[in-house]
Image 1 (cartoon, one colour):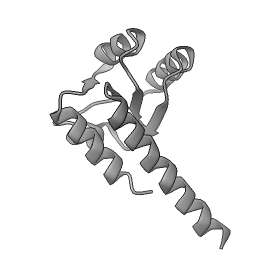
Image 2 (tube, one colour; image 1 turned 90 degrees about the vertical axis):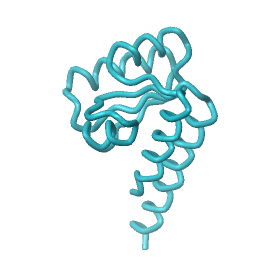
Image 3 (cartoon, one colour; image 1 turned 30 degrees about the vertical axis):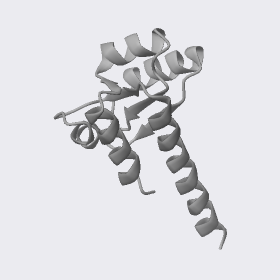
Amino acid sequence: MKKNKVLSLAGLAARAGKIASGEFPVEKAVKAGKGHLVVVAADASDNTKKKFSNMCKYYQVPILFMETKEELGRAVGREFRASIAVLDAGFAEAMLKEVSQQQKKEECVCQK
C-alpha cells in the first residue's frame, strides 16, 4: 500500500498546525471533539492501540494503524510518534480517501 501519500498529507497537516501529536494531546483532541482522524503507529504497544481503539470507537472517530513510530514521527517533523490526531476535516477526509483507494487497488490485484 502506498502509505507515503498518507504520511505526506500528515506532514502537510503538521506544517499547517492541524495535528495533535503524542498520547495526551491526541486524547485531549478526541475527547474535545476536535480530532477528525487518529493515526496510531503499527508498532505501538498493545495497550496504546487498545486505548485509542476504544476511545475512537466511543467518540466515533476513524482510526488508522500504519507504519512505525519512527516513520510517523518523521512525517510530522518529530523523532518518534506513536499517535497523531488530525484536527482538520479536509486533511482527515483526504487521508481516509487515499487509504480507501489503495485498498481497492490491492483488492483488484489480489482478484486477478
